[in-house]
Amino acid sequence: MEKQINELIEYPEKGVLSKDIVKNNKLNITLFCMAKGTDISEHTSTKQGFVYVIEGDGIFNLEGKDIAMSPGVFIYMEENAVHSLKANENTSFILVLTNG
Image (cartoon, rainbow, N blue to C red; front, side):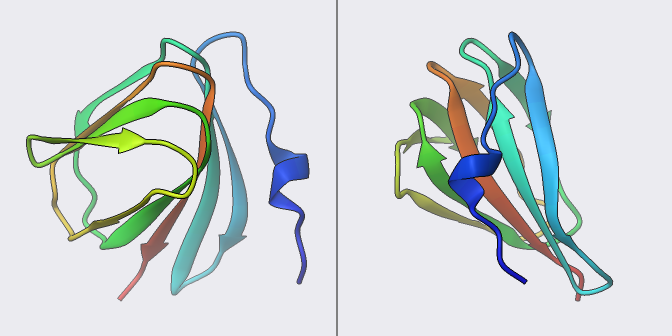
């Protein structure tokens, strides 16, 4: 399977647009496109995973620590880690979660 991720990026006027890239019983890979000014409030996931920022500018708060979301940033999360996001500009990233 091959996908051109940059061709899949599209920003909504507001809020978040997500697109499944791979979804099976072991792996979820999702492209997220956050419109400028969008917040995703604190939440957790029962799965471990990582975020890889493709483009944009934002803040990823992981367990109380602010991490700048800029192109190329990789953020690893343990399961049940509290996190939130804020897009200062249109921001896109890949979220990978493992099922097991």
